[in-house]
Length: 480
Image (cartoon, rainbow, N blue to C red; front, top):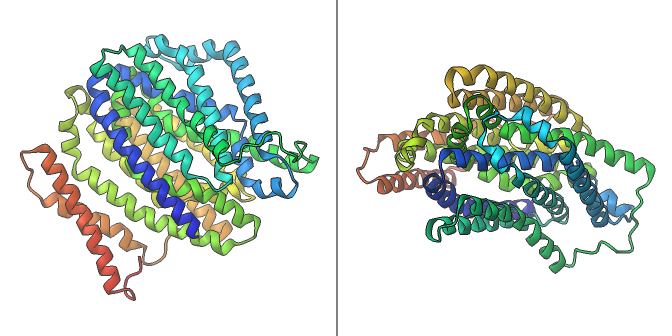
């Protein structure tokens, strides 16, 4: 448990550092240096590369995390096997892209999409992301969850900032910036490779066996097959709204939506930091039959994600007008998207690490079926709402889909595994952020945008600190 909290805390710190850098790039520089259409191209490049990378990892990262202890018990060289699956995935992706890439994107994209002019960047971005996913999974199974977070959230964004600086001060063209952006996507994989070598974990030619026994190989392939679908589905869920927006109302609206999506993603920072180490910990606990530990991790994740995710939601909501005033005029019509997406991310975080629990249990196939149903639901809602409400319709579709998705997962874990995310004191977790938001709303609007933002953030954080003080004074009446 100490390792879980320690690495989860480090991951959260790195994620917050990444958010700070991302704020400078995505909120300060990109809306001013790039048009909404150009921002839409970046969003599509990242989204499509992530989806294709998930597909061509062949599901092996999930199988490696789930069966890490079995790999060791059977004296298998899991690093060499990971590299083998990586090379196979690269080979299959290149072949599939050459054969089917053009007709696939003719079906997916708007015929007038600006992404057509830059689609040749997609293969490099996909391969870089694919290699990172596999190497990061291996590092996480060795209980090194933090380097991948640091390299992707901080290192990658530093490279993006350098590319944006080249545009701002050196006259770098948009094409040059895209080259820098692809290099930024490749940076985490390259740096993680050096980390593994430095830690002497890089031993692909070791003495352990490469041949998996037949029964174990079938188990690995079964988990990998379902992981392909679930990983692909999860990636689609993150990007589905942007795909529908691009297809139905254009790339420029996709760019506007992407900027507010970034702000709403701040709510998931604590959850993402915890989930990176929670998944291998849960897999290990399941292998040892320690259901009590899993239930404890589940409750801790839900309790603290509800609190800290809610605080971040309160900060965003109280500063919504400042965020709109801060952005260029052409981005401001998307302000309402921030609240819808913020609540969807809060629900996702506050229900705890439910996906990891199901995915590492013997019921892992349920995740796949549920995600497929979620895609169908979200697609139908986007197709229905976007023509009526534009990008607000896409955000509403996401909120409804994510809420239903997490409710079903919560009920499944409760009914089948006998674990529930909240206890009777959980109501206080929701009340604290709500009260913080209401107090911040009472403040009069100050003429200085930056001072007003800082004051609201300070008040909310001060009230959070006060709540911890109250918990210390009355530990028997109120358990955090």
